[in-house]
Amino acid sequence: MEGKHNLEERVQHLENRVRYLESKLQIIQPEKVADEKAATFTHDIPVSKTDSVIEPKENNVIEWDVLIFQKILPRLFIFVFIIGVLWGFKAASDYGYLTATVKILLGFITAIAFVIIGIRQLKQGRTVLGQVLVGGAIPILMLTTFTMHQLYDMTGPEVAFLLNIIWIGLGLFFTYKYKSQSIGIVSAIGGVFVPFLIESTAPNIPVFVFYETLLYVLFIWLALRSRYIILYYLSAILLNIALLLFFIFAGVPENDKWLAVSPVLVQQIALLTGFIKTSYSLNKQAYTLFSSVLLSSLWLGVVLTDSESSIVFAIIALLYGVAFYYYQKDTVRAPIFIANALMGILFFVKMMSNELTIEMLIGSSLIYMYIAHKYKSLFHTLLGILTYFIGAISIIYKFIPAWISWEMLHWLVLIIATSYAIYYLANRRKEDYQTTMNIGVPYVSILLLAFTAMLSILLADNASESMERIIMSILWIIIAIAFMLVGKSLSIIQGKYIGAGILFLTLAKIILIDIYFVSVAVKALLFIILGIVGLLVSRAYYKK
Image (tube, rainbow, N blue to C red; front, side, top):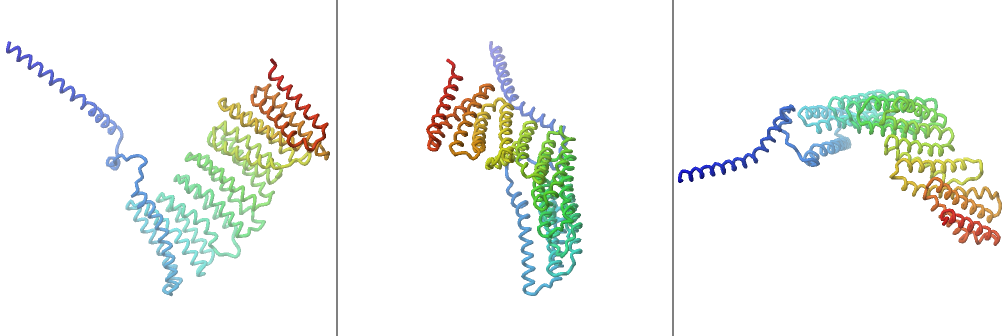
């Protein structure tokens, strides 16, 4: 019995041991599996030496040391240093320590030192500091050349211009070699002012045009190639600024205007080519393309005559119209081609016939509305709202002087286009139907009331004021009936309420205003008409 008892104790002890080991395995096993998966993942994906020592960082954590000491301080204090050097030169000059030649040499030596030290910093891995130093050398070279030419008259305009071209070319080279957008930005901004830093009694327009065109086409190419979006924006905008300043300060002769504005068309072709041939940040390129067309159109319309600028706008419209024809199935490119083509047509119409500009604005808003729906574009929705708002405001303040007049056409186009737009928007999405109709139908009724108020004056034809009021009241009653009939036939529930509201408004107008200006017979007539209409409307909607 004792042996049996000892055997049972040993079995029980083994069972307890097994349970203990099983509990341990349940803890260790998941960790083991995770380690095996991690090992497999690491084995499948090659890890470089630098990657193996990088520890994961928390997302959205600002590295203040990097931000302050590597990004902000070098960029800020390079400008502080340049200003200090300039003031130092001035102080030394005021005290007679430096001659003009020594100051110019020191300027060039400082720039060369910046380049040499910057390149060394880049090679040692201090990228931001190196780029700032190399980029800072470009404005120093430009300012030194300006001082040498303008202040001390050491060189003529040709030599100064050639030197500045070399400095900008150097900036392009450094931008490409060291992959630094900041150097490109400094060079691009400097490129705007170089022609204006050269003193010349007779500006050479062909040289200026060739210089600006080549400069900014190269910058656009470099920006797209290296994916520098800020440099791309600047290249698209700065050319327009340079040309506008040239027209303002240089006094371009009539015979040279076409030559002076030709860079705009070249730039449009360059931007369009980049937009078609590349796939980098297409949305940003699209907005830049549109902004460039708008900016160019605004200042070209000022510096050129109507007939001259209309030719430029026709070319722009044709250029983007052809682009849309070939890329109409491209959901990214096609919408912006339509917008730019419409922009060209709008300015063309404005130059050729200013009165039709309002019709063009209203028509463009409808096209933008359709494009926004087709391509799901918020940008075109905003364009449609903006163009409609400008067109509507321009019309609302216009009084209709005659039956056949531009003002009559403007009002008819506004009412018809608005009615169609509300119908289109309401039926585009069922969930938006009621909201659109609740806003749109009252808005159309207000336009009709304002329109018929002016028509009553034309219909009265220099008759008495009381006749005008009678005609206006009758027209408003007709509008009320029309809203009710159309609303009932098309199942537009807002129609009957708007119609009833217009009837109440007409009654209020008669009681509060017209009653003091019309005879008793006219009062009786108006009240009889309103009473009959009100009863008929009530009977029509409630037959029981």
